Figure 1: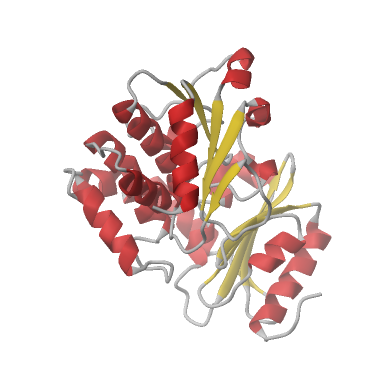
Figure 2: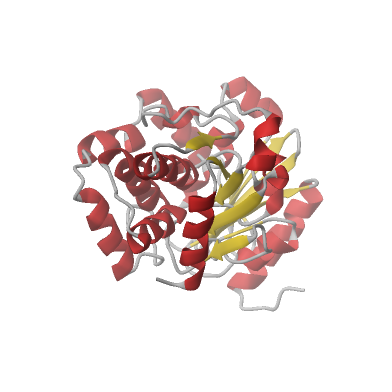
Length: 318
């Protein structure tokens, strides 16, 4: 067992109250690691109080126990806060983790900053769920069906159904271990990937909006009025529609820009290049080929698109 795992396990053993955090606007890996670890801790330490906090994870309502909880401020000074699937402090949902007696992080994004007292940040994992699963097995935690399901979901979604190059032999070994606990993959994939006719039509609408830069970067621009008129959430547009540009022949980089009350949300993706430094340049972060940032305005978007074109052309980004 590596030293950081040993330190993390020691922290978990010390505290009777544990609060689990993850990044805001949760995707499958964020909610999967949060719920999976919650169930692992409850199964193995039934006397501990374990809570999940953050903004709504309603889109994963089909996962049993996925609702967030209301936690009073006064518990934090006596609690351990565990941050999952989050590369930067500014992205953590529920800032009260800073008031906790101790902090621990499990993350797989490219390192940006130290977040917790025990900081496990390993980008060699395809997902935070994979990292949590590896930790659980290394320290000898019992894995149940109720913890295996959300952990497997996070591995599937963050690896692109095991297609992305972040998928390794270790990924498949850990996924096989989780599958051995009786996950109904038919039901899981039906919830994850089935679409209504209206949703298919909506993706077609966004597909017809795709624009291209001189350097061959594909992108979408979504105004606040458009989002309101379509009756969609920010997540449905920003994170949900970036995928309509994937798998296009000749397109190696694509981006989705969405107006929000906090600024212009940028979701960046690539099938070939490390674009994470560009996200960091504009105040964001993430993975080498899947990352994001919040921009001030369209002029920053135009500058970001020029930087993305430069990456594709092999130029140095200032």
